[in-house]
Length: 189
Image (cartoon, rainbow, N blue to C red; front, side, top):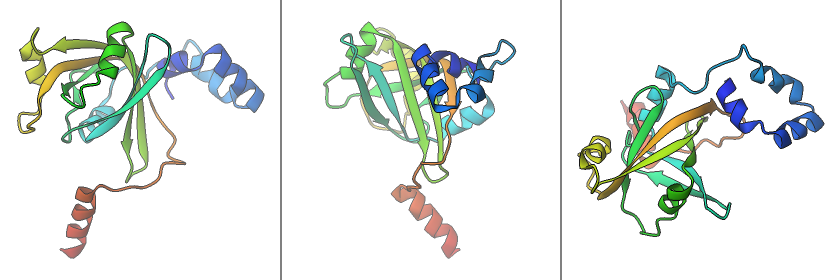
């Protein structure tokens, strides 16, 4: 676990629980001045992000309530723009706009990207800039998948503050229909 994630996640109340549960000493080393990392994407994270067809996204309302939503699209719809920003074209959905409303007041966001077959999970924390298609269609077009027929209302650009790879211990192995078909096709060859 890199320092950037620990600095955000290990609040005083978290550290107090770590102390009571006996894990504080193993995590305290992550907060030492000489430890760094966890806010600049490497090739490993970029490839993982590019292989995803969805992720869980958490925002916070102005009344303090968390809101978690699944965002899905074609593989690679969440794009790595460089080593800290990532982004996606926000497709029109049920038109409740809960995430959009939350982000208009509080730009912090947290994502969980899952690879169920390989039991891998990447957690990302960052700040969002939203770009409405009417304000800058070129930015939204850059984030769109030209082969995916969905109306994009805005671009969501996330500047990463921290990320962390999570322990695979309790991740169930699950497969999409496409993944099952690919595995079956390989076995039949």
